[in-house]
Length: 479
Image (cartoon, helix red, strand yellow):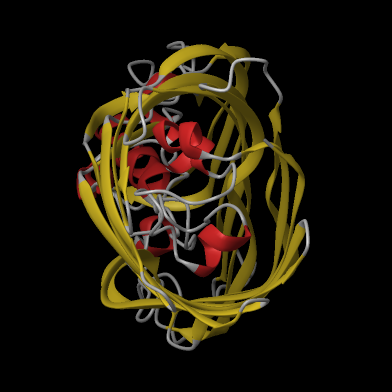
């Protein structure tokens, strides 16, 4: 019975051992959409003269004086993420990525009624790729001297790979009620996909005549996709130089999705009780599982003022909280083998993939200066608060949404206007850090038990990104 209890703790703590490395998997405002909107940091809820209003405020679509607009914008980014002491002193997670993100491709559909505007768009709210490896080796006091005198040769390595993407497909329509008011609605379909894997290996060679190997291995894999729907309702008011807007986005409705989860935990020659060393494995794989992913209720508001040379915009957005839920429902299959070692432990205890979100409030401010009729300068900033819910740290299972720090964004650039088109160029800088990051599984001063679960430390994490915006807007014809 004692062996079963001890092995239960081993499996629980091993499944609890998660490295946290993502930077934008718990931030709503990492990406902005459309050339002008990116350079204004999204401070365009009051209104803008292109079809990005499909996303920011569908009500403002009704004020567009152009029946056919095409907007394309892409951000080219270099990202750097560092988790200090992920596995131990000077054993950090580091990830450097270079790539492009298609921020928006969309247009307007010409309808015969001048009071109606219809638009469509394809956006990438989330695009993240991380690969990190941390390694620690040396000689440490691991095994009791009665079994192995002196320092034991020890090798430990952890690896994390995560690819997370979301594609947003939007279809919307607006009706202009009069010269000052317009209302609209956008249908938002979000396709989310994630492929996550994590491995941890620890090896200790005892100083006995057989050079006995004490080892532990942990492997976790999660793959899934999900499709969900939300509706965004917007109202816009415009008079003279002022524009104001208010939107409400409904909580998401789950449409469909399929996923798979696999976990493997192995202990070899571990001393658990009464000087006895045992070997055991806990393993299972489940596929073709239905998936659920949730977006919360959201409310945004904004005001824009257009002077003779200057344009200033302020927008804010509140996102509600989401209670903990399972992304996939895991069956209670046999997990521990031999099965008679711990028959009370099921796969559903250790392979659950859970998510949650706390409420956040973001603010953006943007400024545009008309240098001349064909050239505008932009400068803007926004905060991007993390919705990470700390209660997820208290649960067993596999956790794939794992960043917890806030990000701050600054954008600057120019727009060159020529007849029926605009060309936008910009620089995008983002930064975020914390010195209060809870890191589980470090091996600073490892003992035999630490080889399984590690220890919990408070460490530092940082994120930095430098990007280039290239955007093009084409106005086909006006009324």
